[in-house]
Amino acid sequence: MHIIAQCPRCGYRWWLDAAAADRRLRCRKCFVLLKVPDLTEVAGAADVINHAQSELYVDDAGHTYG
Image (cartoon, rainbow, N blue to C red):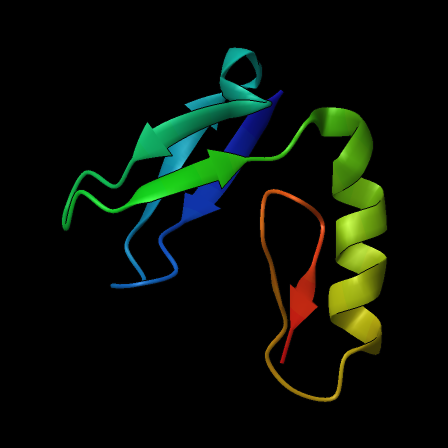
């Protein structure tokens, strides 16, 4: 299984292996630190994004902004 990561700052996208799940990585282009969600959290995150009216940001503690 592969994960497509997208940087929240510059929008750069790249493929990750499933082993990258639940880890923090740096963007390959702008080097901002981002968290790759655990594979069990992906379905819930996709539902929240689909129901959002605008951009939604969730920090590491689970707080939502937007």
